[in-house]
Structures are given as C-alpha cells and as structure tokens.
Amino acid sequence: MSTTGESVAGVGPVVVGAGMAGPEEKRVTWAELYFDLVFVFAITQVSGLLHHRHDWTGVVQALVVFVPVYWCWVGTTVQANIRNVDTPRDRLGILAVGLTGLVMALALPGAYEGRGVLLGAAYWAARVVLLLLLVRIPGVWRGPYGVGVLVSGPLLLAGGLLPEGPRMVLWALAALCDLSGPVFFRRRLAAVSYHPEHMPERFALFLLVALGESIVGIGASAAATRLDAAELVAVTAAFTISAGLWWQYFVYAADAMRHAVTVADSRRDVIRRVFQYGHLALVAGVLAVAVGFGETVADPGRALGAGSVALLYGGCVLYLLTFGYTRWMMFRSVATTRIVAAGVVLALAPAVVRWPAIVALLVLAVVLVVLNVVEHVRVGRAARASRSGELPEAPAEPVVGGAV
Image: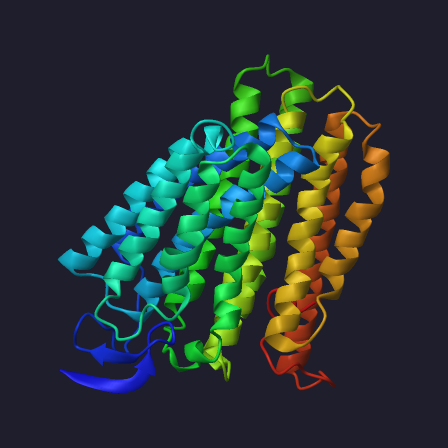
C-alpha cells in the first residue's frame, strides 16, 4: 500500500490501494444512481414548500433548507469522485447517507414547525457518515467534511429546537458555513486529484432530476383539470419551456463544462465555482420554474400574481444568468445571447403579472425557442468557419454551451 502527496479534501495524504481510484476513466456507480432517487423525493418536498408559500419569506425558507439537502448530495458526490466507492463498505455508506436524506426529505414539510429537530438530526447523521467514509484519511477533520460534523450539523440541530425566527438565523448560518467551506479550505483542497469525467456527469444528473420536477409540476397540475383546449395549450407551452431549459444545458453547456474541467490548470476551482456553486443556482432556477408551472397550468385563464411571475420568469432569469456566470468562470468570456435573453425575460415580467397564465407561458416558450434557434445557428456558423480556417478570432475552447 503506497501513498502520494495528494490529499482528500485537502486534509492529508491520499492512500492508493485502499479504496482510492486510479487514473483510469471513472464512471457513475449503480449505488450513486440509486442514491439519487432519494433526492428526487427531496426536491419534490422543497418544491412543495415553495408552492405553499412563494413570497420572499417562503423563497428564503425553501432555500435555507434546500442548501443542506444539496450539500449532502455534493459531499457524497465529491467523496465518490476521489475514491473508488464500488466496494461493499462504500455502497453501504452511500445507502446510509441516502437513508438520512430520505428522513430529511420527510422532515421538510414541517421543517419550520415540529420537524425541525428531525431535519437537523438527519443532516448531522449524514455528515457523520460521510466523515466516517473518509476516516482513514489523516487530518480529515480539518476540511469541509469536518465543518459539516463540527459546525453546520450542530447548528442545524440546535436551530430545530428554537422558534421560527432564531431557527432561520441558525439554519442560514449553517448553510453559509457549508457553502464557504470549499473557499475557506481552497489551499488545502489544491492537492485533491479529481476525476474529470465523473464530476460533470454527476452534476448533470442532478440537474436532470430537477428538470424532472418541472415535468411533475406540469403533469400533477394538468391531471386534475378538465384538459380542455386551453389547458392542453398551456401544457404544451410549459413542456416547451422545460425542454428549452434542458436544451440550453445538455445540448451545449454540458460539453463546455466537461471540457473546462478536463483542461483546467486548477480543477479544484472549476469544480467549486462551476459545479458546486453554479449548479446550486441552476437547480434553484429550475425548481422555481417548476413551481411556477403548478401555478399556471391548472388555471390558464386567470391572471398571474406577482409571486407566480417571480417564480416562473424569475427562475428562468436565474437559470440563464447562471450560464453567464459559469461561462465567465470557465473561459473568461461572455455568454451574450443568454444574458440578453435573461434581460428580455426580466423586462417582460412586470407586464406578465396582468396577463392570463396561458399567454405568459406562450411568451416565455417563444423566448426560449428563439434563444435556442439563435444559438444553434451561431454555433453552426462558427463551427463551419473554424473548419474552413475563416474564423478570425477563434476561441480557445470548443464552440459549445453558452459560447454564443
């Protein structure tokens, strides 16, 4: 058994041969895919919180409880990326985190009522399991996994014992501790050896789970209605929006992100900025749109309120602008078309408040279709010019995802 100078979570030498993955291509395991099913349910529960209360307070409450759910998934994904987890011990560990995630999901509807302690205890248990999976790594306590056990876990549990106001404060502090961990320990994380194929695939799958919630938002609302012509048009428009969001990520952006993490001088920075943080915003945007569907498809003739518009149009704006952020982090260039499209959607939002829901859905669908058509044309044109040697300022990266 040999060691290298690399470290897991920046906290000690990596042991090669004791469950650590080598340099070969790394694929997602069946245990990880089964683990994701728990988070399908968890995302549905977070959407339920937003559905019942989508003013600013409700949005903040949903975000505060979504962060620990998301961060448990991130912690499990990172440790699976830097280690070989296709062993009986690690499969059981992933399943144990899945169980705690299921309990967290069950606690979410009553998180600000009588189930706050259950949420905090389940989260703390998940962080303990994740730390135990890495217990063989010297100094594992002095990193993000240690923060989860020693700081954010106790804060979440303590918050569950308090009234709603102080509970929100402690839970928000716990979320900030988790999110700031990779930044605070970035020097210690510099020596971590990440597998470039596995990480993009895992985060793409998580976004796909969130997009699945948008389909649920459409179907669950429409299934209980008469399904007359107006409602079928609303379903078609909503599905077009969902498909448009999928197109923006999986047709172009996914390849750009995979390319960026493969060629980056510091994979740590790309993973932290683009995947861990960027995908939090992408998923949040999709969830907002999904809840917005639930507010529009069921009654396409009524005028939308400000809250529903904020979810439907605001979620789309957040999603599009996040591609501007990720592209800048990856290539230091501007995702012009997506930023412009976000501006158009934002400008339309005040007028949409007074329009029937079906019109609001159709307008947003048209904007996204036009955006995708424009990007398709520009990418094709740039690719043809590049092949013929006519591109005067060819980008250093492939002409992919948000590169237009």
